[in-house]
Image (cartoon, rainbow, N blue to C red; front, side, top):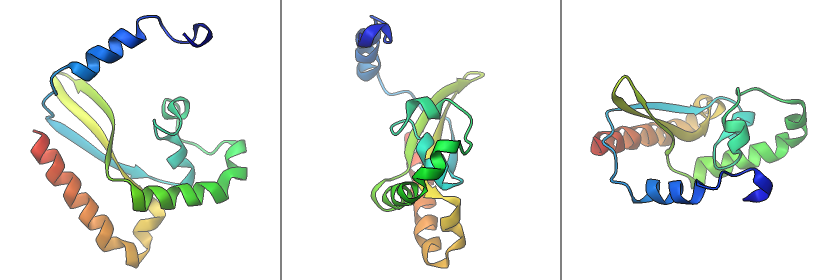
Length: 129
């Protein structure tokens, strides 16, 4: 169990979650990355950073060229992704993330594609419940 860092029941819990019926979705919060460094906070990139405040840390400055390439990869290769599922006062909610950072919104050449991404996300959310 990774040197005691993973609980012994993790495999069983993971199996239960994967085999449960899909929960109905009642509300979706649609978000996007705000800066290049925020793309490092995605759960599949860094589960550690995903649980902490989105801020630039000193070591991220050296990664700026790679962050730019990562943001471009996210923009062109990924769809809107569910990054969080939760329940608030009995309402099943989710946070979905558009794979774009805020600077893309300022570029006219990207606006139509972003608009289409948002429409697709709204349609997908509607289909989900």
